[in-house]
Structures are given as structure tokens and as C-alpha cells.
Length: 468
Image (cartoon, rainbow, N blue to C red; front, side, top):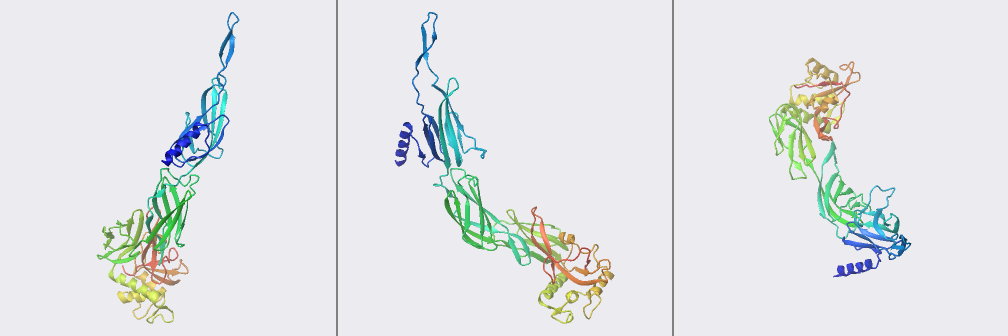
């Protein structure tokens, strides 16, 4: 009833040639009446439609002498110079804007399409093409957010690892989409939308974008958490309850004995997972994440969730070498480094570490059964027993996963005389999957018995495989 009265008053005002102020929020078909020399300020909402109706005040046609007949009698006719033959409706071009926020047709009908401002000129022309009527309308188009709502008031997101280094894991930004319920198509580039957002949790950073009535939240965090996100659209605030889970894999690196199996598990996510192997001839994987070691070598097992990937670098090896690497890693991370006490239990230096790990689980003693040798004697033994790997150490071998757990690298002060100038040896113990590049290719890094992930040596350093 109130709406009907409101429209009745509006129509009465239009009929009297009076129209000013703000058009009601409901999108409908309105009439804007303009008189000669009018200058009106009109406020519309996006989606409003209507018609501009000129109301010209015209003097009735006057009888004037148009000429004389052959007898000299006057010939009378109507003066139509002030009679309007047609109207034109023109949107003024803005130097700074390439598009208009409303459209006006040749018959005066209009549609408010988006936010902004326009200047509409109404011109009336007589039959001779001269302007005899002019009026100007200054239009402001705004958003009506009264009935705009979000399709969700709570969302759940997942944080996927983007990069890992040792025990440190960095998580990717997650993107969450929420539909916006609006009869008007909203975009963040529209004037008046003024999109903004903030998080109640200071450890959660968030930004937002809005396109075609879809709100996208870009969220970053480094652990499982919750937050309340406040989004403001066109001055209206919306509260969104956000919960984030970190997604992980049970292992990023694993040494798997040949003909044995290992089940990998995804944590923080219970939906569909697609498993694959970079080399199924070395290590295959079932659709439930069970990895089987087939032959000696290395592969990356990938769990794909949507467009996200998490991986585990698997090295298929022997039982003896798996024990060697485990022992070397324990010594390098739990015992005390001491060249003076290198022969004692609980102490090691680089060559003693290699010697102790291999001696305990294999028959290899590098030519010294009673006590650890040196880098010089160990490299000489590897050379004598044809255990050197052609080309030596290189980052490319790491990248292509061509080194195997148990391989050892000798550092030298002079690569022209590498055997006589060795001063350090380090045992390679496997690979870890750090993440994936933009093409979905795994990024792997090397693991070492007594060094952090990614440790390496100079290109061309001596590389040996003591146990083939």
C-alpha cells in the first residue's frame, strides 16, 4: 500500500512538470518530465529504468501571411517555426571516461546500468532543423545494497604447502569463492562498490576481489586457524566465519626397500585424492596411496587435490643401504663432531661417519678394517675399486634424481688434483620433495647425513657409489 501511494505521488509530480531529489530504491519504470530550460539533478539506482518526457510550452500556431494570390489577396498560413518536430537525447562525453553508466534511447527511454554520473541533454528541433527546446539533466547512479546478501556466511579453506625446507613449511595463498546475491551485477571496478576486507585474526592476511557477483577471498596463513572476515561492499558490511586447515603428507622423503610397500597418507583433507608417480617402473602407487618399490632408483609420488599437489620423494634401495643412511644420519645429528676423538663411540668427523655407517651394516671398510680412514684413503679406495661415478657431482644429477642414497661426495681444494687434495666427504641420504613449479613439475632437494637439506659441493667434485 505504501509503495502504491509513493508511486502515485511520483506520477502526480511528473504530470505537473516537477521532479527532483532521489528516485526510490526499487528498480521500476519511472518518468522524468523536463520543461524548457530545465536543469535537474536526479539520483538513480543501478537497474532503474524509465522515460524522459519533454513538456514543451509552445505558443499556439499563429496565422501569418504566407504570400499573395494573383489578385493581390493575402494567403494565410500557420507559423510553425516554434513547433517541435523531433527530440534528441544526448549523453555528454566525458574526457576521462570511455563508457557511460546509463543508456538513453531515441524515444527517451533510459536504463541505469552501472554506478557513475551522466549529463543528459534534451534538445527539440523544429521542421527546419533549428533548436527550439533545451533541457539538461544531471544524473547520479548509485548502488542499492538493501537486498544484497552473500551466498555463504561461513567458509572452509585448505592451506597447501608451496615450499618446504627442512622442518619449515610455507603454505600457498588459498582462494575462496562466495556468490553474491544481487539483481545488479557487481564488480569491484564499479564506482561506489568500494570493496574492502579485514581479518579478526592478525595471523591471517586477506584480500578480496569481486567480479560478476562472485566474491573471491585470497587468504594467507601458516597454520591451522580460524578468523572472522569482515567484507564491505558498497558501504554494507558482511561477516564471514573462516576456518583453515593445513594439508600435508605423511612423508616428503622416504627410503623404500625394493619389493616392499609404504602407504602415504594425506593429513588435513578427506576428499578426493589422485595419486601418481614420476616413474612407475621404479616406484608405483595405487589409488589409495600405497607405494611399491620395484627397482633401484628414485621417483616422486604426487598426491593431487584439485589443482594442488603434494609430493614425497621415494628412493628405492636395498635393506643394507637404508640402514647405512639411517645410521649415518643418526651419527651426524646426535653424536659430537671431534677429529681428536673420531675413533671413539659418540664422536665422529666426516670420514669417520662414512666409515662407521658402512662398516656396521656392510662389508665395506674402505681398506681400513680397524679404524676410520681419511678422505684421501677413502677416495683412493673408491677409485681403485671402480666405485667413482662418471662426471662427478653436479646439481643436474640432483635435479634429475640420478644420485642414490649412500653415495658419497669428496670435496677437494684443487679439482685438477682431486684425489690428493680431498679435505671433506659427505654422505647423500636421499631426496625431499620441496614443492612444484608452475608447470606441475616436482622440485626436489638433496638430503645429507650431517648437513641440512640442499647442501652440495662444487660442480665436478668426486662422486662415488661405494656399494653398487
